[in-house]
Length: 273
Ligand SMILES: C[S@@+](CC[C@H](N)C(=O)[O-])C[C@H]1O[C@@H](n2cnc3c(N)ncnc32)[C@H](O)[C@@H]1O
Image (cartoon, rainbow, N blue to C red; front, side, top):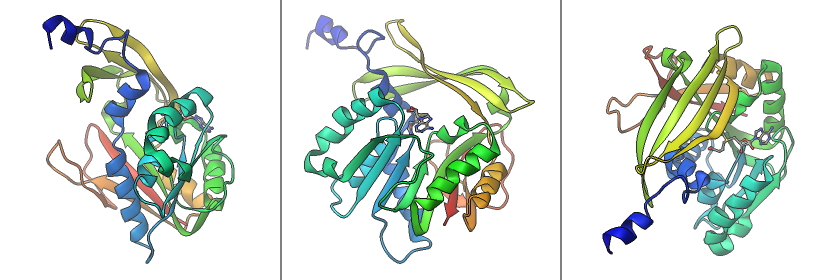
C-alpha cells in the first residue's frame, strides 16, 4: 500500500467511531464473561445459561456471552436507543443465528425481567449513576427479583486516592484499526457527596481530538457501601474480589477481606442471591 493510501486510513477524529474506540479502550468481554461464569460456578453445580447485562450500551458482553454457545441466552438493557441500535448492527448482526438468543430491551434497569437470569452484571461502574444508597438498593432489589436462586450479581468498582484527584490519565491504545490515545479526564470531585464529573476524550496521531466523547456525573461508591446496598436488597452473601496480581499488565481477582491501600484500584463486587 502506498504511503498516501496508508495515511488515508489512519484513525482520526473525522473517521473514527466513538463506540468502537470505547470498546477497544475499556471493555474486555472475554475476560469478564469468563470471570462471571467462574463466580457462578463457586456456588452452583450447573453451568450458567442466562445473562442479564444492565447498562449494556452496545451489548458487547451479551454478544460475547452467547457467541458459539447454543445453551446460552442474554437479556441486555439500556435506555439509549441509538447506542442499542449501534450494538445490534455491529455486535449482534455479525453473530448470525446466535444473535437470536440476545434480547435487547430499551428499558430502565430498575425493572424486573424474565426469564430469570443466572448472572446479572452492571459494568464500567454504571450503577454509580444512582446517587443515593436508597436508589442503588431499589435497583438491586429489581436485580434480585430477576435472578434465579443461586444467581449472582457482578459489579465493578474503582477507587484509591487518585480517583479523587482532578487530572487527565492518557493511555495509548492499539486498536484493530490503528493507534490512538484514550484519555480518562477526572474534571471535578466533591468530597461532601463523593460525586465526580469525568469525561472520556480520544486523541489521534494526526493531532485531531474527539473531546468529551462520553461524560459521567456520578457517585464514587466504596465497596462497603455497595455491599450494604446488596444486603439491603436481599443478597445473602457478598464478596469483594481484589486484584492480587503484581505484574501491572496482568490481573488476577480473588475474594479478599483485607487489601493493601494503594493510589488507584479496580475491584469486582459479587453478590449471591
Ligand atoms: C458507562 S456506559 C456502560 C456501557 C457498558 N455497560 C460497558 O460496560 O461499558 C452507561 C450506560 O448506561 C445507560 N443507562 C444509564 N442509566 C440507565 C438506566 N437507569 N437504565 C438503563 N440504562 C441506563 C446509558 O444509556 C449508557 O449506555
